[in-house]
Length: 417
Image 1 (cartoon, rainbow, N blue to C red):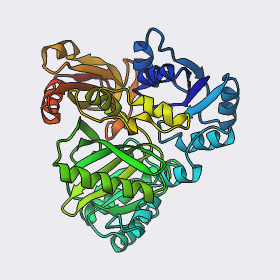
Image 2 (tube, one colour; image 1 turned 180 degrees about the vertical axis):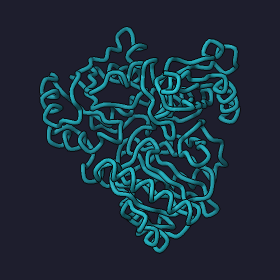
Image 3 (cartoon, one colour; image 1 turned 45 degrees about the vertical axis):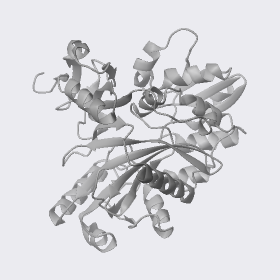
Image 4 (cartoon, rainbow, N blue to C red; image 1 turned 30 degrees about the vertical axis):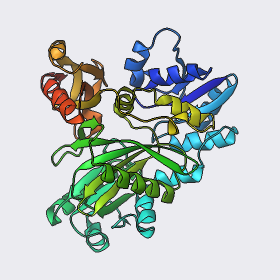
């Protein structure tokens, strides 16, 4: 039998292949760009084979033909936001196990999710959809007030996110959104522009696994973001050492949030701010955590969490839900290394010195020399990640940060020719 993936997160393919093989299945990746997975494809060896089918994954008919060529297809994995709805639709069409496509469509609309949770009493504020133009300022003020966050309903990688603290910020953000949309002929934003209240407090993510409405919290990840004006993630660490009662409250809260949003099976990556009132949702991703989140869980929990992904894909209760869950491995942190300016990546300075740092430091490249890096204000500007281990998430974060500060992307810019 075969398990196929319709695209995937940049990291984790090797562990997914291991999990598929452990279940007695072949693993196939459908992708429109092998370059996204160059690190994973280069490091997989032995029996953990990944068969790759090159196909335009934005073309539903081409994907259907590719899946028809896969022998004994037993399940369709999706770990991305962009392809989550097409994957759910295809699984239903092919009679494979999978989530309800309507529930997936709700979770891909961040404005609807906020409104749904507000009606259920699980979000203090609601959202208001606005047109990307300066005249929408009054709608934002009346609908959610200031400070606020403007973002797009189907956004990814922190693209098209504006934190607006005052009238000047609001007008500038709406003007930028309007210009971006105008230049793209009304197609410049990924979904609808909407506003929601700004949440004051540190950012975290709850990493969960569910089945038939039961949600288990696998751990909480800390998340560090950049200063304004850029809105991008800079670092993360797992697991956060929270008091037992606070951790239990977060598990209850995230279970209620996922139930209200209609997510009743599989992984979820739930970003939240721990405000003075308690946890408040930022967004729900109905997938395993991206970047090196899942790698951190594998190392800390000393289990291949992708085995649970395979279980869910095959339509069976994931064994990880019932397994003893102890963070017996090291805590893990990683830091994203961004280009300072747009251009073409020539390489990195400082990689040869990483082994001098404590914490079993590892380098995970996101880009390769020769890649264009046209944007640096969001996650698209990330060229790689530095990962480190320690006894606690706090110490791991210190180690990862100290090592990452010595790595510098070398860029060929237009000025340098």
